[in-house]
Image 1: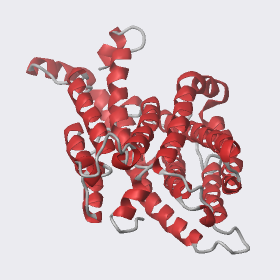
Image 2: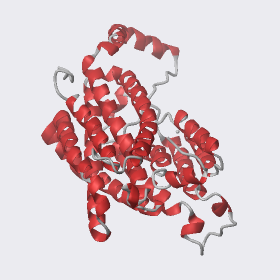
Image 3: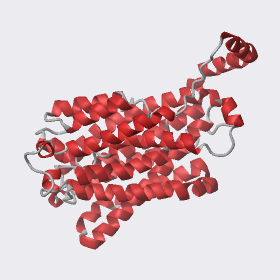
Image 4: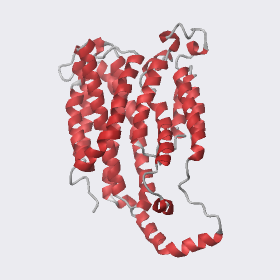
Length: 392
């Protein structure tokens, strides 16, 4: 791969394309859930607190779930078998997924109810109201699976023993040095401190995504917006489109001017007042609510991706090229833990807040967004010295 990089000229658009569409296929099973998960769990009469081939299978089975345990089992297998997002970090691909996923989930969920002239209640899409969006995503993943035949492998495979011996002789000292460095990876405080900050922001973003959908579909008497799954999908799709435009045309200039740390700090600080306005949107309606909500979600998404990208770059800069794979593994493992506890914690927080609508101190949904802001402020504090160490 190093020889290939040295001989290549310009930007490898072909490789970026295949990696990008793989990221999109990985993000769709997650992002498509937000518009309709609340209604699906409600139908299943319970409360809740992705290799590509298997993703096709289990995502389709998720859409055919008729019991709560089946939905949980298929989503668990989807997450356990999704090894693509660990070695791949293409935030633009994720941004595309945040546009397409909510749109598919919002517009295709409950098709017999939304489009009674096209889908019958007695058809498979009427009996399984969330099968159509999952089927669409599985078909996309199948197309991506076929296209990955042309995705080059980054692991160099030697064709002959002579070549192996020559490589070992020429790089023995380098391997010994790298082996020594690998042992001290956990003692690399610039790396570990950036991973911790990254995980705190990931916890916040995952909890926000969970809470936003629950808050949007909850009734107005509980401080929500009384949105349908289609309306939630529209909001998330527009926010994802704004995020995609920002990543493609604006973020590079922002990072060049501010750098990874300052951009993350400013974005984190600006997120706090934006989130603080959410509870008061319930008093708006019509055009004013639309403007406030679309603007708020677009800005929140833009600021979040600035933070996550900035902290990811800090991790890459904290280690050498040979260590980035191992460092990324540590980061992804820690991030996955926080992503696992965030939805359950957010769901419990939302349920608790619903019971305190008449409290004097941050009643109802105000307490939810207050706690989200506290987590954001903790992450902001972790981007300063002496906690965050900057590599030389």
